[in-house]
Length: 453
Image (tube, rainbow, N blue to C red; front, side, top):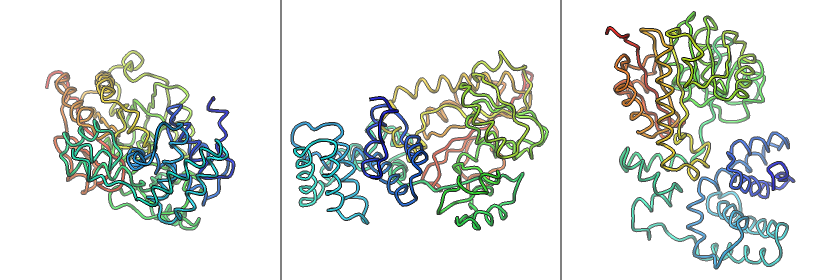
């Protein structure tokens, strides 16, 4: 069945969640993209939208835990879609206290009848009612602590082990649990169009509750409503962006009038942030490997009223072939990475990434940084960032880069609020999801000393 022929929304939230999860599983699509596409296309109302999002994300986030809970109650093999239906139903029973268990069971039985037949409906009913009678099995029975943490937090064993090896059991445990909590909704104020106070007042007037972050000053925390549907958004006063993603542009800290390169720029969140910091004075070249993604940058700059950004379809690794040597004052390399810092937004990553993927990503990261040094001016600034929490891709890439490039030196990260400045070490900053409810993120900064230094 092709992706386009899947009927996802017929007014039934749980059936829609099942369709989305089946499509994600089959097509390796990102759940957040398919969910947003479904909500937008069918103009799903706020109440249904919230429940659909919660059931879809929640079931995916807790998939391994749900399978562990279901295992004692399933006899023999069951169809793939039936297993997903059981996961969705048990997620509601176990995690969503406001939904009566009998309602979740009855809904599952009706879906099973529509999608299958009475025999499947009877089996689904029997399994779920058995779970209600007996309760879910305890994870205390799992002897191995890594395996137990894997099941409790629904992360593959290799990933749990890697996090524990990298950061110790306490930090890893906190991070793994945090990955299953909903992220804070944040927006960035476009200071070329409005002050923080003006943006808050505008959002409040439209019924949203906005509060200035105590970490990044231009960041607002939104506790209700949809910022993308507001007048403030349409008129370019705000941009939807995770708070951690606002760190790289602040660290780059370009002055008005500079010539800046954003090497892996799409969809343009950091590009436009750089332009705003530069007060829309100077020039920014935003490049990306995928030409169609450059349209997103153009759309964003137009909405935000920023006219110093030019886009070009260039693979950052080949930048020296297309761009003049030593011609940029500052460069941002927000590199492709494993995305292990954004798993609560994209829970699919937990199950699709493989440990060997991280090796190949580091090669790309180093190639991008190598290319950046060639087009950076002497005394110019280079910032490297990722949305991962993996030491190999972060500190490991930085160390390998500095070893290969004696003309580059690590420098202290500038323009960081106190809360973040205290966390930096050796020109590097690792933010964890549990630090302030944002994505896991890494930033490092370098200066080009020149050949004679």
